[in-house]
Image 1 (cartoon, rainbow, N blue to C red):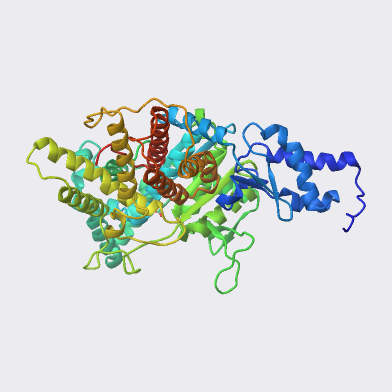
Image 2 (cartoon, rainbow, N blue to C red):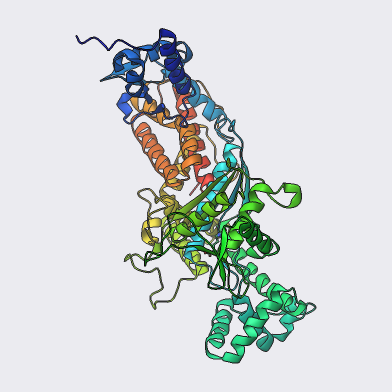
Length: 608
Ligand code: ARG
């Protein structure tokens, strides 16, 4: 038996380190890396691998060190955990006691209409989430749809955690393109340039309008000159140009609001690029004062570490063009300051964390802007700026997502199509009825299922990978899809309805009281062990910002439920106590499914 090396540390010092490890292990939350959910179900519920890393430092062998950690840990956890098990070289496996699991499941059921007994965060932050952000007079495309769906989910989740969340729509409503649009309106819709009449002008299809203006800009030199002058007048706040610009913004807003209504997106506050316009020259002045912005070919640029153009020359960010106009990056720099350092009373947010949900193509832009903001000390060090990138939406063939004729797909058509297919499917599986109430119900449910399918298909993929859009897959009743989860939820409601003798029309569904939970079968145990991991999951996504983890967990939960329901009868349970216990598990499971679907922006129905 090799003796451990003679430790050079005092006993007190050693104990202090082990204490620290134990302290780190205490809250059993995902935040501390010391204690993590078990990698395999049969290892228990959590594991602590600290002994391996610590052993050398304290001059013990890892198993000995693990024993020490367990000794310290025991009094703190003995109420909820079985005696810790030391495995292999020094892994500590932790397993919940069944009494604890039973009590936790009951608590979840009791709060199934609320927060499932999950306490709010003890570390409340102000979090700005910048998402959706379509561009005025341009097509709102599938990329914006992804940003909207992912951003909404992250906001819902952070809000659920107890953070103070501000949802900002960084609409592209400013820039040189407005020169040509305004001049085009001057010729085609002169009433739009008059403040009195501009509200009543119907600009028709804005994408067509944009294309027509662009065509003139590219082909007609005089028009080009007028467009350039138009931008200057707009930026100077000239009444005609402002009226025309406002009418364009208003018309666009009507269009994207329609999409938000169908998607049930709420609380998103419009804070377009134009809002930051008055702050841009100040940003550039500050950068110049700090000698961060320098001149390059008449433009003003900021050089940063680690960026090179293709030819190997240093790649800067542009903050002011040679004609004096400002860039996309300048606006983002102004926005960063506004969102992190300006008090709410002054129109800012003083956020601790700012998230930007855009396609991964903008990763470099954000990286550079964040670096510039730090270099210029525009933000406190403690503030976290995070780009939340996502991949492309592709067609089923992996190519560009387009209609059969090659045109871009209109978002409204896309959503309508999903709802139509969901409706056809519902009609085919429900007894036909000429009842008006029936038709109304099918329509309502089809809308829920169709929109849910689009959202879920997007959210269930790792956001960083490209995802192939397929109506067939997203509307499938099998697999990790919205219809599958919605049916799983409705089925549990059906079980409860039957058990408690409810007739149950929509809307008056009654949840049973939570009862004592009796663990009588392995499948019950496994279902509960899965349910109690919900807080860890929420903590994980709060940091990692990966919504697909919510979907994975949902799918797992429904599978564990199916195994339980396949093996254990609820309505014909042997005793009334067992029946009540199993109904409590049904309630906790249904509550978990509904909570997560709601976080994903998906409504549930008790009957499908
Ligand atoms: N409007 C931009 C686009 O359509 C997205 C804006 C993202 N937010 C930001 N702060 N830059 O690509």
